[in-house]
Length: 193
Image 1 (cartoon, rainbow, N blue to C red):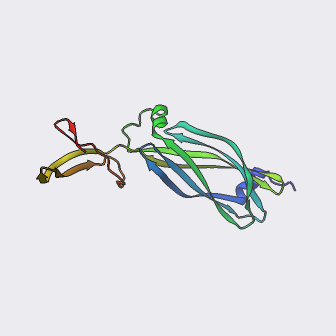
Image 2: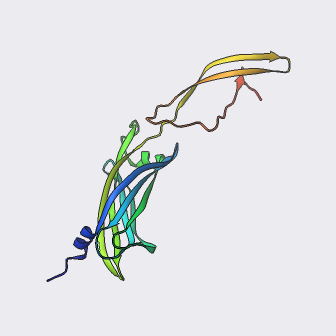
Image 3: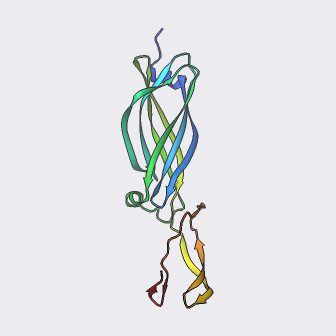
């Protein structure tokens, strides 16, 4: 009787499933597209995650390739255990628009991550397990702000109190909050303080 090849045994021993896809740190400059993967050891053997390699593809074009990385210390995955690992990809809109053509007017963009997880069994290599998951991410478009109305509340020799009403239009398919507002006010081309 011959033992199965390590890669074939690994495929039966470790189950890789997608727990969640998340957009994090969304800003006008970019975002993080994060993949959370569950690793479940369904075998009677102990394993440890020792490294990984992956690439990130946007509209069938490679955006990012991470060469093989060995973990500083392995992630133990004893028999019958579960662990979650996080794979983030930073997307900057400036690089995205330079690298990938034809997405400027899209509300969201399809993408996928694919790679391999490297495992150890004791002190020996346990093999590599492939993974691939798809997702999409939003493209941020700056909101437009226009002055709707200006009303004088009070006017005296010492100054004036004005109420300015703004109209904000959000062209994105998602909502966001406003933390601060910066503005310059001019009357007749002269700045007011």
